[in-house]
Length: 148
Image (tube, rainbow, N blue to C red; front, top):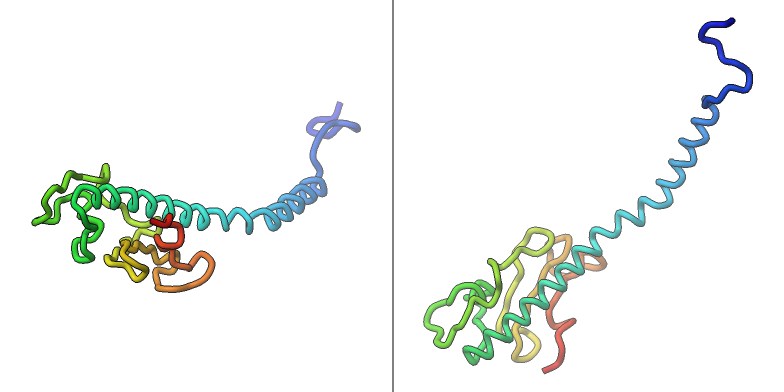
C-alpha cells in the first residue's frame, strides 16, 4: 500500500488543466470587461436625464403657482425654499434638497434660458467642462424637453 501516492485513474486536476482554465477566464475577461466598464457612465447619463426631467416637472408646478420661473440667481434651490418676495409660492416642489448630478457636481440653472422663455438646466457630464462628446457631452434640459 502506497502512502500519499496517487492511484491510477484517481480524480484530480493537473497543472495543464488549471492553466487552460486560467487562459479561458483571461480571454473571457478581456472580451467582456470593456463592455461592462461602459455601463456605469451610461447609467450616470440616464440618471442625470431623469433628474433634469424631475426638475422640469417641479419648475412647471412652481410656474403654475407663482406665474413665473425662478430667476437664475435663485437657482433650483427655489424649488425647496421660498427665495423671498415670491407670492403664492406653495412649495417645496421637490421632496428633498436639490441633488448633485451623478458626477457629484451642481446642476447649472439659467432663466431665461438661451432657447426661448423656458429655463435651462445643464449637467456638464463626466468631464465637468462645457461641451464634449460621448460621456463628456453636456446633458441639457432643452434636448429632451417637450414643446410648449
